[in-house]
Length: 218
Ligand SMILES: [Zn+2]
Image (cartoon, rainbow, N blue to C red; front, side, top):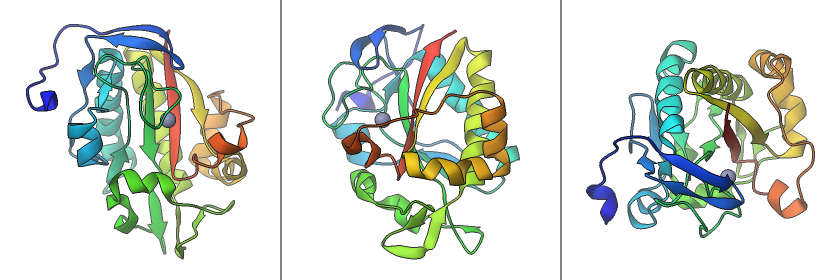
């Protein structure tokens, strides 16, 4: 498992697009940070899907650091990134140039963070939420849109500091109204952070348990 021996150094280069690209000198995201963690041991160690561009690496680390203040006591999870050299991956059509990351939706139950369903590993991708963000398996658990928005704002700030910008966010179309109703969601809208307006049914279906973000060089 090369992930055990990987050391981040120097700068990465992303070539091509998320849908047709590759990554040079990819950085491996930490398996865990103070308030955030990679979602799956097998995705990280066996499949080697925790690699990203070095600029994005620094962006994520800084964003989670600032979330320690803006989202106190919240534990985040980040999901699949790219392979070491980018290119084709098992379950994604994109994620090929080291500038895409999937982020697990933060969840709450009676206004407290709920992490019960955060430990499913790869299976988390198959969780389903209704159009109000309530989990199909347990309607008491719902997406915490306010925390999600604060995280996206932190990513937007940190991306600027590292020569990146948020190019596009993919979230299930039916969930966007609820997201924009949150205070932080309104700020995301005000900043003009772009959310996909249309997704094909098979792509839309999978973007309720996570939001996918493509970054690009400024
Ligand atoms: Zn994705």
